[in-house]
Image (cartoon, rainbow, N blue to C red):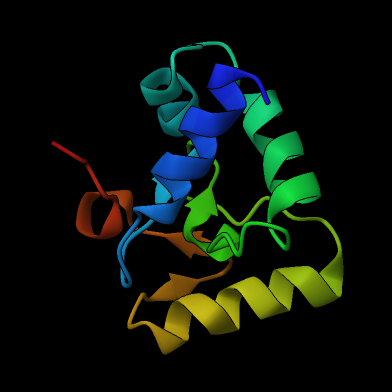
Length: 101
């Protein structure tokens, strides 16, 4: 496994309940500032295998970016279950974005 992929997995695992991070933020922290799309691919292909809290990752605008309706609704429900307010598919990043040390 490539170091970037390992870093992405570790960062996502550390997102606490009730918080979100963006694809780009994770990519920057993992060592590839332009790697947001790679983060998307990693989440898509490895979330089940590594039990990643995929639903805590949103786009740079705080929007749920998943197009599949069922997955979109699931992500909203999972976030709301953790106390995150989702309004029209959008999360307030000022209030809910996680910034690791």
